[in-house]
Length: 448
Image (cartoon, rainbow, N blue to C red):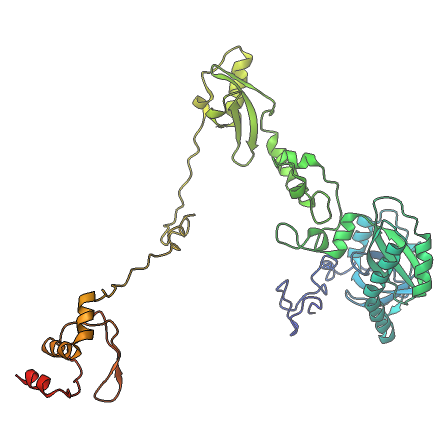
């Protein structure tokens, strides 16, 4: 089964690269792979009749298959609602649904669950598609009604019921909102049953989606299903600066990813001495500045002596110095306990120099342009002489044909009729023939 939400048009998905063999029916966080589908039930045991149905966004619910319908993951079914009916997609069936019920709904009572009415026909699906097409326009109009009533709330999403008789409006607000008049106005304009449901800022970000500061899609809109509380102590344990602009996500709250590596940091910090331990030396008292958990280093600095800089010590060395101070002894200075960490050279040969960080430093420097040899201007006296006696100048040029004169020279026609462009950097060997001079005396002088 190919993915419908990320297909490239030919049935092959672009996102998960599963080559169109997705058995879950999609690529988002709502899809579940039934890893118990091929497991046969013991003899005499009936199949579990509770089925998990998913609706728009992250809403899921459990329904009872009282009619023993043959359901598969991805089937569109019609289920009971209050009032009317709704349309959803089957997400989990069989024994995997039993595990989900124990995990998600501990006090679930199967006999009180709503029932699956039937598998959706074409009329149900057409009405369901029509309901989805109305949601965006209705959301914009409801926002306008809320602004006209000066209500401090933000309507972020609208979900229509499959039978077009009811709509649920999801909104966020900092405090309590009196939306009784808003419900009346929306019921008069949309002619449907209205239900208002307040959600948090994290649920709003999960519904709307977006790109985080890491450059990837938001975790809450892709795979994260539960929202755990995040505190600033998680940032302190990871040695992060308490900058609200960097620690806050798209929702305005602390990022959920602060909890991902917190357990590893807590286990690693147990092997470090307390950060409030001050080290007494003959040069002065040193206090703790920061800790590098990965390199297993603790950085200390002398009080009132910032010129000495930071000194990196191993946790074992810090305990050793603290024990000496407890015994009434003081080391001369902390530099004696610095342990240099040797960086291991890679076991492969760096042929092309790709490991160097400054390998492009001298590559894009602008090359200086070389000045072309300029043509020296003729002397003023020579110019005057040429103007005064042009015939005499022609005689001199005929006597010395190899003298370069590149200034103001135009292209002369060749024997074939093509123009020959002069090269100012080279001497011209063959000078084109001049027309016979009208002055006979000048022509006789040339012959001699």
